[in-house]
Image 1 (tube, rainbow, N blue to C red):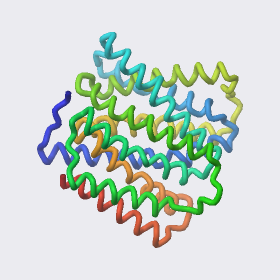
Image 2: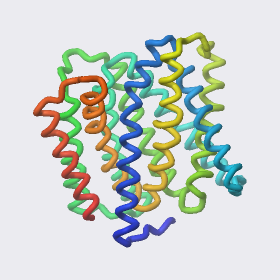
Image 3: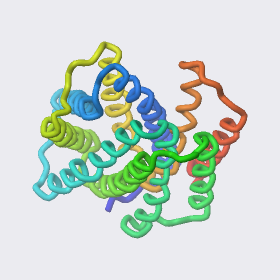
Image 4: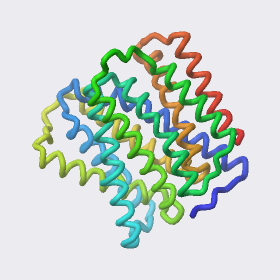
Length: 293
């Protein structure tokens, strides 16, 4: 198992990278909605997203002369995580956007830091400290306040899909932590996005949902999903996980709803309520605890 470096500089780098990743991921719900509005199906959006991301990662691999070959055991493990847990997580979340508001879907998704913390304790031997427990409570409470909205008769299909995404993403993150101990981050991300592109593309063809007739707005949204919310987000997140561990990274990732709320205020002119600011302060307090850990 990868032994985390405990120097303050490396820990600070890990926290900063995970925070950067959450900012990149905060664009995901809005970009997905724009892509759907522009005529792109869920399967088309996801397939093109990961094709674009895989192409960029392979260009970086070739340009940098990285050794990208893996052992059979490593390849099988990455395939199980990519084509299994991560593909299911992405599909479930993007399908959930169709049935319930994006904010509500993200709120249910953020059950995953709790699952990651439990799994990391048992499988990665990451300690469960009082700081980590308090940070988990603060960040989850902050997410609930930021994203909280009336839940009168929500479509249970969206709720179940969001919770499925949370559970499978937690497994993916913990499994990735183990594999990153022996695989370079760039190589790992390249194989993950490639396998996701093949898996989702195959499913899209089988279901007859690979439709390339969409407008320019949808094309730009897919570009944002592929480059910002996948390439930049994955590169920063996986590198950060190497430095600070899966459970701390998952807790810090709850900064995403804060970034989404601020982004909506600055870019889309959406209101930023006092309750959202209170929730943001709670999340930031939890993130600060993790930085001090």
